[in-house]
Length: 497
Image: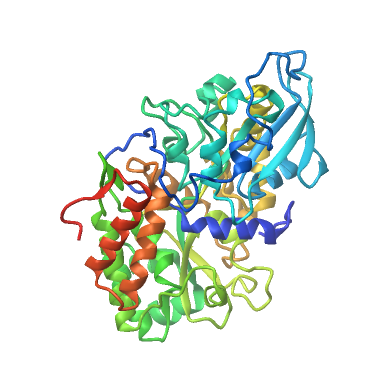
């Protein structure tokens, strides 16, 4: 289906593509949300910025004196929203009824209690400020700020969100305290809720999107190499990691690469992970991720794959019609918004892609909206979260006009049987049925508060292994040292290297 974007494709695509580096862990042993010790040197996160330490808007932290700017129903006049990019602002602007933009970083709404509320978008997109470090500075003391300086809503991605939902940290409110009831959330996919439950199973955030992943493959290459473009046939060649390796070898015989880079396959293997990164201070490398590293090294040594970085020029060229890249792995939103359909020379513009499930159920990326403890705008916070994460009409509009794989089973089910929801990018294929199956199968049991940091550190350490500068064991030790340099109470579990 040809979609008319309500906000620019370039902005949304950039956010969606970058989020692919943040996998959601797979099935396995439960790892409860836990209070996170402060990092000693987390990429400058501990300091974050002197501005952050002074409060959400550079104002000195003060005790509220009770004489705030609350409206007649006890609600504040300013809703501060903290995020690392403009995606949430763009979604609210495009889809939430009653929102009126005032400037690029502000707007206004009338909340359900009848109060006019100014909305201030605090977007931390300065590369010199670590977003997680900023959150660590402003959230714990949020309720001590003057009411108009408090953070009311904040966004956390898949690599960070578990860090902020612990009941011990108490920086995110239970959604029940916003008046949002369980029956309103019945259409959401379970893993998207499991990601934001605390130690006691209390839900502390919501996501508007399912980022369950699919394998996007090149139709012409599937016909040449596997003799058929139908997803059932192609899936039979990619239904396990073992099958993936065999298919990669077969594709190499036709001078094709199974993916643009070995790093594209990390979320797939992460979908097999069954243990948390850190348990009782011990850092463990799950066998699935060791397997990723060794499988990828084999592919590189055989000349089947490259270790090019994601999102660079070579990676971007993989979307072109004349590329030798067979597949990408990403969410439904990635398919609709991240495949360069605006480029006439791309395979997407020609309807040259199709999709299948891929080797294992996995999720890649995602954002969660959380209400900060101390907010004085619970009414409007709930209003925005309901609109984007619960409301059928709004979410149908988001899917139909924005290409967003919304976190709503009923909406996606309706689209799966709608001929008009077929994708031009996929040559007329409707992928929503496949997406529902993947979203149902994704598990978040082993996800923990250190996933973002540890996953990035592990991938970075493996670069020297892939490029023959170190052995796997040496790179694992480097990874352990990186973690310990940041969290000195953690140590690499014996036998990992």
